[in-house]
Length: 318
Image (cartoon, rainbow, N blue to C red; front, side, top):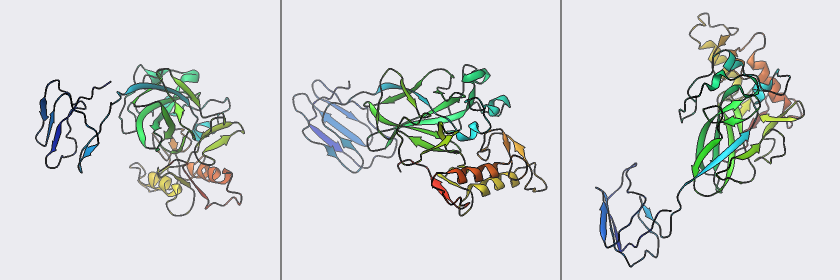
């Protein structure tokens, strides 16, 4: 635990630019001064800060400061797109088999796959990268981690084996699962986390999730993240303003090899327009992603009129 020592007087001088800070511990046994070019902290022993001191840039709070602790999570989740055409309850790993999975995470952390994780086959073969977040009681994101998603739904660290690790203060957090072209989902209630991996299964429908119809139900039994958020705006939409269909079309027409600008041009690779994660992107033609998007829209429980203009939103707090 960090020590909090008595402070006699605090002078806050000028503005503090972003990124500048003092150490997270202000301590002296007989009277010292800690400073940088912007701030001076004078402190002595024997007298305590009895109230919060702040200006527009900095807050000095009384009390004892808790150190961060390591929390471990072993979540399980499925992707609707990777379950399309699957027959054994396992997601397809076409992206791995076709060598289209990037070694570096597509999310902002930039974590790189290690331990030859992409060479594993069977139930633990890697389907894609995903992202796991933890939120505090106010729904503020306090931890983000890239994860590898296995065919059986297990989310593991970049080594393909270890549980996900977060450094955080406190123990109770909402746990959120995200994917680059699927809608995210989150636990309805905060989960108690600890130094022992906490298992969370989002695939059975027994774990309450935030919002309504937060996940698709595949084959009447498996809960999975909704596919189809090609433009990654938190909305799945086939027709209408800002629809995902146009994003598929733009990807096809904008491909450098599509010199004839054909709507029927297919290409392979790692792309958000690949809704079913088979490594092939098609706007029109056999097994195209546009028809998959249409089927997803028409399958939503609230789309009782089977409207092609129906849309639905990601069930996450702002």
